[in-house]
Amino acid sequence: MSAPTAAPAARAATSLATLFAFALPGMTLAGMALVFGVYLPRFYVGLGNGFLAVAGAIATVRFIDIWLDPVLGVVMDRTRTPIGRYRPWMIAGGPIAMLGIYKLLMPAGHVGPGYLTLWMLVTYAGASMLNLSIAAWAAVLSTSYNERSRVYGVTQGLAVLGAVSLSFLPLFTHGAIVLGKAASMPAVGWILIVALPATILVCAAFTPEKIAPAPAKARFSLADIWVAIARPSMLRVVAADLVLTLGPGTTAPLYVYFFHDAKGFDIAEVGFLLIFYIGAGLVGAPVWGRIARRLGKHHTVQIACVAYGISQTVLMALPRVWPHHTPLDAAPTIVGMFAVGFCASAFLLLLRAMVADVVDEVRLERGQDLTSLLFSMVTTTTKIGTVITVVVVFPILKLVGYNGKEGAVNTPHAIFGLEMCYLFAPILLVFVGGALFFGYSLDARRHGAIREALEARDAALSLAAAEESLLGAPQRL
Image 1 (spheres, helix red, strand yellow):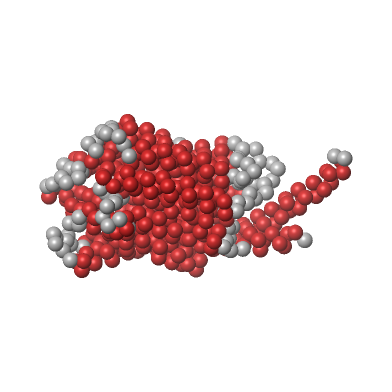
Image 2: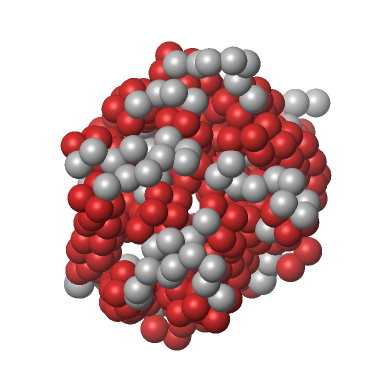
């Protein structure tokens, strides 16, 4: 009699209140990603470190950091505590990230590449614990193929809201805090330091966490890890995550330089334009989630890739604005930024939802719950993608003679080199990401069959455990 009740419980929709509580730390982490991905490299170049020094520091950190997520994934999957599997990792990651933020955004005096390397390692260690616990936890909030698109859509939408809120700081503070200006970085740091523990507390207090029953067999080995990761569905998702991070990610460290020097906007306007790119995710996340429920996740990713290529090409073709331009002159760029951001918002949420489907496939076929480990594969590819963009484009900027210091005047040749870095890689890489999903087989029908088998097995395991407990009780008297 217990089996019929298990399936509906697994398919029940997660309430919006629960999703909101769960997604709150993601808002702060998205703000961190914005500051560290777009503004931190420029900030440290402005402190007197050259392009190559900053690129080298970031590359060193990422080379060390990429090994952390798989290790965390293995340990996290084997964690059992009275407060859950993922909750303690989230709580522990918060203070570590806060310390790193303080040191990086509020440096005392002149600091060099060694300082940047050390405190980025600390910050990213805390962020890895937070990001991986959130990504894996989301997979157990809902087990339905379509419901997962909704869960990741809502969490992604709130993450976008967090990043947009930081971009509105010039408006909220009447110009006292402007992202991209060195003098504003300490204030931005304090905002992140205050927001992070508050959002973690709400998430930890109000988000349920369920751990599915597992067969008694399961001895854990490196061979099991390889078999899980090397399955065709996971390999496609991992490869696509890498190139779809590289594509839009290539523009992040160049963003301020490009729109300031190549397109003619001042620093405050550059931050204002970013609002439309990031804010498009508030619209894009639920729209792409709804499309995925009708067409399937992998087909929706392919549609988003084609749309991204078209919108990015149009944005690049828009002419430069000139000094004393009117808001109407900036309108085409605003529309272009919104379109590109709308398309790019599909990638993260749909790929994370697809990893959750692979988790179920592995659990059914291997009898092992490798949720955190499998999610660590895509969080690692995201890290690799972000470091490649900086390591490749910063030396090119150095080669063409571009000067990245605040207030520097660059030659037309240097600005042309900047434009070429910003133009070609994103479109080509995104098209490769879409092509990887031709022939992808883990669709809604296949996942539905997997879930039925898992729910039947989980119900049987729960019943067996209950019977064992009842039978064992008299023997202990």
